[in-house]
Image 1: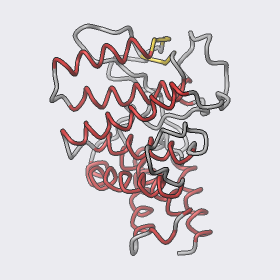
Image 2 (image 1 turned 180 degrees about the vertical axis):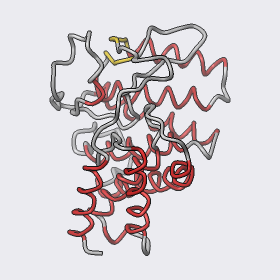
Image 3 (image 1 turned 90 degrees about the vertical axis):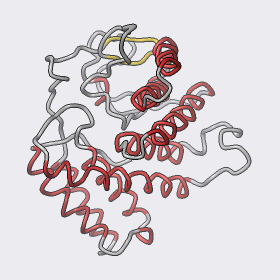
Amino acid sequence: MTTSHARFTLSLLLAAFASLPVVAYGRGIALASDASAAQAIAHTEAWIKANPKDTAGYRALAHLHALAWAYGETIPLADTLRPDSLPLFTEKTTVLVSRTASRESLLWWNSKAVPAGDRQDRPVTADEAKHLAASIVAYRKAIELDATDALSELGLGWMLAQEGKYVRELPADHFGQHKPTDAELELQALDHYRKAYDLRAKADLAGEPTYQVDSQISAKAGVQILAVLAKHPDAAKKGEVQAVQDVLKPLAEKWGGLMARPQ
């Protein structure tokens, strides 16, 4: 398959995966509210200290750092912090966080920090770069605790791709002695997208439709796989592009619309 054909097919699949209906965590629409990233992170770190083997704690910590990377020190959460639970994320707050897209802020109605429409990109601050690095560390810890944690694999791949996207803006000491290229980081991300996809593809095809945030992990991972392979066709395994497309097509038909976008 040619690169141009792969990109054309990817665009068709993205059209099918264009939107995600707003359905909450079994309790109606959860309105987002402004929250302090520092407070939410401290809350989650305390949770992890009390529950050091809890994969969900590290995954939540990674997600919070990712949101701080994307939004700054004021982030959207679905509710106030509760002593007996991890932070709750909104229906639109996927692990595929972006510094520019509006999707995560669609339910951030009461926020004065985010105007209507897409958020504008901005220079990367030193603190935001630290959040990016911390998110990657926390996702790796979650996977270390649970090798079947597909959502953390997806989140880790995305954050590595974010490093690649902003590699020229990150501080000189961000990567240590070896500064990878954007291509190297994209291919590192590809490894984790593949793991997330492999872990969830069969279950997503067999499962009943649900529109909870990040429920269609294999679909989101598959879209990212195709996006990376469109840029790096030599990295594709034999028959991989077609195999992923053959899964994404029935998923798109089955779920009737998903929030998935390429990096």
